[in-house]
Length: 137
Image 1 (cartoon, rainbow, N blue to C red):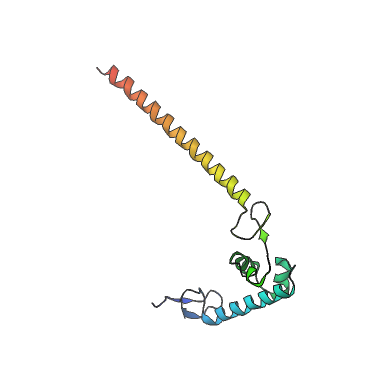
Image 2: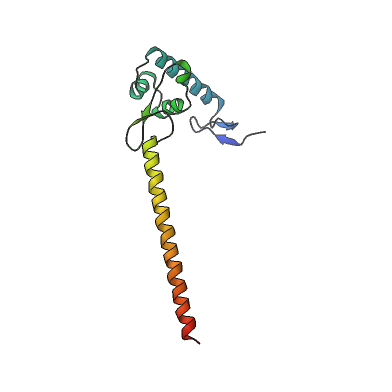
């Protein structure tokens, strides 16, 4: 299946998008940078994301994506990055399990309040209709 013709977001060159999101030249550069990051992490097991970024020139988003994909676990290195809400160390997603549970609880609470409000409004509406129908007889 042929991809769409697009401009590469990295270099601007026209390319046939086959799912990589960039041209093959830039994709090869990404793969090279990822390999460089993996080699650096292999040699510097305690390195944190900012240190890896500084040493390799890789963007932190790339490193976080690699952590989420388990790329460092494959070489025997367990790495984490901070939860976007509280800063706790995580290995997948954007927020930690505690923040996720808190958010889910808040959403459930809001949904319950909305359901209760709708039921009250419906009850009030039914009461109002009952009074009108008696008055009109």
